[in-house]
Each structure stands twice: as structure tokens, then as C-alpha cells.
Figure 1 (tube, one colour):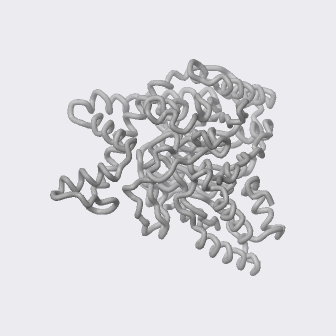
Figure 2: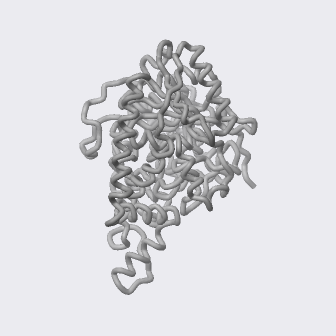
Figure 3: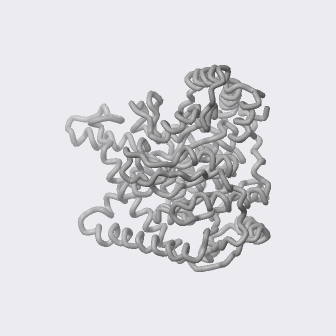
Length: 491
């Protein structure tokens, strides 16, 4: 049983055919994690005891002839900014190093109700601020395809866990590309749904108007299956979609792309795009044309300015959201203080990492008196322009295609000293969060050095089903989704 190659669909079928038990599956994943995670550094918390207990209970249900849920017996790893009752949730920060939530996030409840088994919490950039998973207070996660490379960020732990074969389903959050970039770097399917389609209740906020939870999976079909569970209205989240979702994302997945109009923005293929990525994307475009899609180049002039607006808006919201960590109510508290001011200053100085401090300072600056109009207000006005630009584009095209990342996975430490270069990693992904539209990244090839390359499909609001159909058609045509990295056990 090659556990690292198995999909959600294959595991579910195995349970039905009684080829293995839930306990055997969970034990296999835990044994693999124990054997190899010392090399990859994925997990902040491993829930071995509770996962095996739940697996045993699930096996008893099967013996009694009870039906499993839609994700019954499927192990899932969660990004460590998603609250889990009784399980430590750190945001990879010293500030929340000892925080144990008293409640489950809504998506955790949905996963549990569907029968999924929480196997652990994954590493991330601290408070989801970063593009490489190097900003964690605890460890640096490595890319399973090449352990000298980063896995992308900020959901790099979840992406690496999936690629390394530590779980068949992992969950991340995407504020400006934090699901799609790691998916591209690690060779996964990564989906950022329409803003509000998946509840954010229990997601520890970075930038509330941009954050969205989504899945990492091995295949597009697995992604569709997990999306069926995750979506829907939540009265606990004021930004949640109001309508009842009755869409089955798995049905008609093989409908194909014949006759669909796919727009390719020429600005996304200019200077700065790696040649091997460009070649791989062109091959994907050719495959889609062969399948009957109508491909048309057009202008979408928002790439560079959108990145600037994103960092203004996200940093401003981060400054506001992270103000709650003051050393008074909860979280890290310094031992070195005499006054209330010293308590707050020292707690925040010692509890936050460098990247978090950088973004808090930037956000506080753009919100401050005298600079609000010059920076934050202009960014919000440009946000409206980005939304309108996408709206116009989707009047002409069913789907937009672009690279996910301008560069291949880079070396650990390569961009740590140059924040601006690191921020450019998100240049193809941030605008979707600003506009609130859905986007998916799937593998479309490999570089000569065997590093994954991702292609991104972008849709209009609530067109997840169409995006999945296009992604599925290309995935099947390329036939590369079964490839997995070979990880050597460390000394």
C-alpha cells in the first residue's frame, strides 16, 4: 500500500471494498510522518492519540454497517491558524505558542461531521505573513521535491504535507496566494474559493477582507469532493455567503472545455516570468486548444499596481487585527515590565517575528493621520477598479488562465533579506483576493531540475464548478498528477 500516492477517492473505495481499515490508513500516515517529517518539518502538532482513537471508532461503525460521512475515515492536516478545540493553535508564532482554543472553527466542525480525522496542525509563515514558510517561529518547512527549496507560503506546511504523503487532504488559508503559490511549488491542486463561500469563523485573521480557507488535494476530483463539505452559509460569519449552496461540485466534472472561451492576459507573460514556466504554460494552453477551448489573448492591466494595493490593504488590516495581542488578555506576556506601556511594548516586541512587525508598521503608517488619504484610501479605490476590471473580463471569457508563480521554487534563505523580492512572488495571485474571485492552481509540468510548475485558472464569483471542470480537463490531458516526490530519510 503506497500511502503517499493514494487519493481521497481511492481511500474511500478501499473502505467500501474492505481492503484496509481506517486504523490501518491512519497508522500508515502517522508512521510515515514519524519517519520522514524530520526531513521536511511540516507538523507543529501531531494528533496521534486522538486520530487513532477516532479511527478505531470509525472501524466499529463500519462493522455495525453504519454509513460513513462523505469524508469518513479521511485523515486531514490543518494549517495552524485554524482553531481546533483542545488542540494547540499557534499561528507559528511565539505570541500564541501555548494557545489552546476552547472551540472548533466552522470548517473543522464541517470536516468532523463528514467523518474526517484531524491528524495534525501544519507549519506556516507566522500569522500567514509570507511566501516561503521561512517566517515561522518554530521551524522552516522544506519542499518535498527538493529539500534545499522553499515550499511556498504562507500555507507551505499544508502543501508540503500533501506532497510528502502525510495526508490525502490538507487545509490552508489564502490571503494573497497563500494556497495557490505553495500548491504550485509543491505540485498540488490548491483552491481559493470565492470570498465568503467558506466560513472564516475560527480562522485567526491576517486580513479579514482578503482571507479565505481552501483545500490542497492530489487531484481535481478530490478538490471537488472536499469543496462539497467546506462551502455554505455560516451565521457565525457575517461575511459568509447568504444563499444556501446546493451545488454538487463533483457532478459533471468531466464535461470538458469544448467551446469555452479562455482569456490569457498578456501582462502576465512579460518580463520576470521564468522561461521554463512560460514553456510549460504554453504547453497547457495548446492542450486546452486541442480539447476544443477557444483561447484568446487580452489585456488585464492590473498586475503591478494590484500588488501595491494588496500590501497596503492587507498590512492595514493586519495592523488592526493584531492589535489584540497586547500581553494583557491572552497570548505571550513578557516577564520584563514595570508599567502597562512596557507590558504591551515588550510583549509585542518579544512575541512577534520580524515580518509580522514589518507589516504592522506598514499598516499603521498607511492608516495614520495625514497618510490615510494618500495610501489606504487610494488602495481601496483601486480595489474597486480591480473588481470592475475582472467583471468586464468575465463578460467576454468563461475563465482566465495565467501562471501561478513567476519563478520556480527558490532556495531556502535566498530571499529572506530582501522583502520586496519575496513580495513579488505573489504578483500573479493577489488580485484575485482583492476582487474576491475564485482561483485554482494545478500542476502543469516540471522544470529540468524536476521542480513542479503550476498553472492558475481564475473565474467569476461563484463559478467554482466551471473552474473545476476546466482544471479537471487539463489534469486528465496532461496525466502528471500521479507523480510524487521521493523523500530520503534524514540521519
